Image (cartoon, rainbow, N blue to C red; front, side):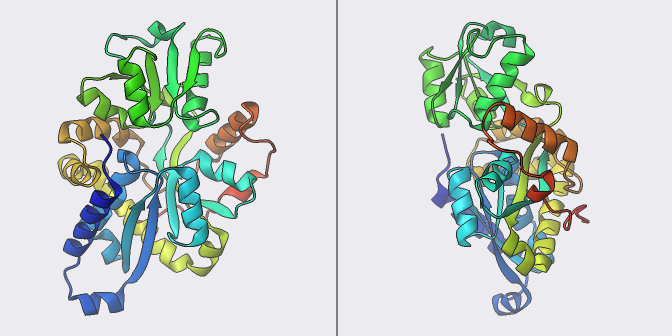
Length: 325
């Protein structure tokens, strides 16, 4: 179900090579190498824009040779960013809030997916969200974004998240689908990869969760304070290329779906469903909604994910937005 990291890197490398129209020696002299870390591969909103920007040559046009490297989750990506194995991370928007509180020097650069692109995936026999009362909902781990959204979903429907539903930590997508198939859960919370589960007939997307969190930020790009200081000009170029990719994604559905399907390894029909879920949330210029950011921080504090309130301005910079494409 999940594309391997090796196959993704092979595809991304092929796209990067195809995008360069100039001789290799000349290209090397005129471009700066840069590595972007993707928090996971199996998410259209995370992977599609950099894949498109690589294949269509948008990064190259801005003077950067970008390699996109998938990781296995937020903590692993953070380690890569802090160690310098990648210079910028694209991740869920709660990560900088959590990791900054824990003492890491990272800062948000730009929003790459607005609002909330996560989905609620129900078992085939579940037709309405209301049918989930009294049943089990799968999440990755306690305290994760999926867990937060399951609790907010329960509250929105007037349910006690401790009594009226059972929120079960199960881990990755394979475990979620297995539990759904065995009837151990009636639904689970996931990103836009829920489109793949629907395509396979193992579940169906009941809703996109932005209605549960009207004020939220789904995904963003971040870097360390040191990288921001040392590579400001390069970051501007990378973000410009990325947002040219996002603009292309908004305006060219079929080509975007083809590129993303090949890169992520999803069937085109599933990729199209994910595209339809994500397209309304693709930003124009990456500006950070500070009201939404405050709501997110308040929510994480209320649920005990954060232990202390840091000044909101410690988490982001406005040096790179609005991104001009």
